[in-house]
Image (tube, rainbow, N blue to C red; front, side):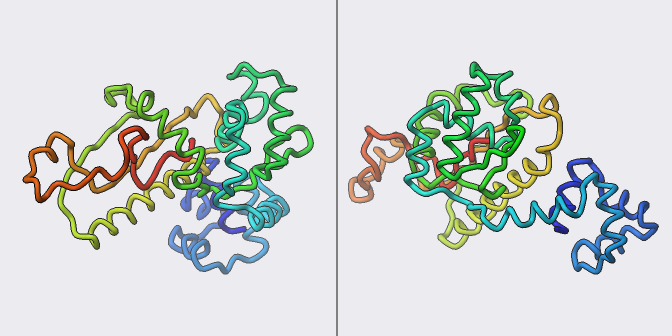
Length: 262
């Protein structure tokens, strides 16, 4: 519940300083309350009021996380991939869009959207609540199966679509770094990449209550693999040449992390 309260505060762009003023405590004392616990019931209710959320709502949200999954099964992903509109609505749900927002942006009727959401409910990806509210049944650190049906789909699209830009515009960046590392150092870098991906997911979760007009779709692609340009490899001495890791017909391996579809 404390973690849920933190997210509610962030959604309202409130920090420890705001809570400290509300409780008439020092900022350091508030930080200790959130990190170590020790809230009295009265103080917890005061912070809930500041965050615009009730203790009942936080308790329900805490209970809902118990049955959430961080990854689907292969059968679930294959079911979603049967219809590109189903994948679209799944990604919209991951982006915390409401039905009216989905219908306003995409060429779907409300009836179409409800039907697709009910299919996703049968797949156990989400739950459709009264008033057509959407509750995800996946965690905020959810990932598609590594090299599974949906990630393969994104990989194939990435070759011709994701990289079709100069990466010089607003909210765009592409960093290409080459180096020679030991296995231990490479594992350390991979760990940092995964931590960055989790931080991205947490920021995404924190901002889900902001108006749609203040948010836009952003896809983070993190990649890392042992690799040498074919042109360079052909210049190696014959004894040092190694066969290609994968046949040329398939899509290239884009690394250990691919967008969550956000």
